[in-house]
Length: 130
Image 1: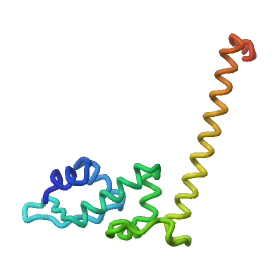
Image 2: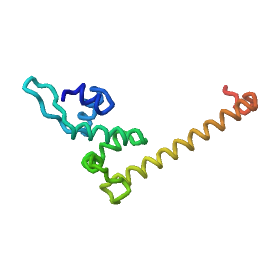
Image 3: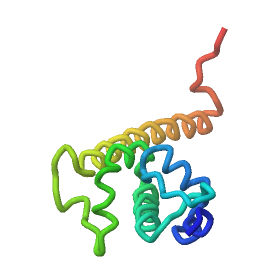
Image 4: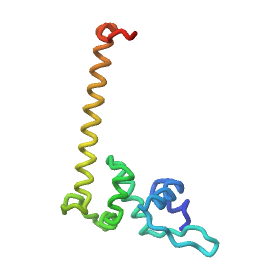
């Protein structure tokens, strides 16, 4: 199938498929005689797996770091990320992403507290600048 059909089947856009290919998440597809990309069910399954990982909060870089393991998620049923551990699995990537999210939540919580304090004091808690 052509890129538009494959993108629609995977629930994304042709631009996203080209981006995933550029980032190494998706293997370069076969080309037709006229040079158009040709996708099959395996590529659509891989794109769906990529989109699931992105939807749960991993970044493109996170997924790219384990692109060689995406085939496990394309299986029916998919292999769970927590079924195996080791430096080559998704487990360390997930733990690192969780730590990054926790740090961002802490940063935003502190920012919110400062803004709330500023509003509550009418701006009196902010030192004057010279």
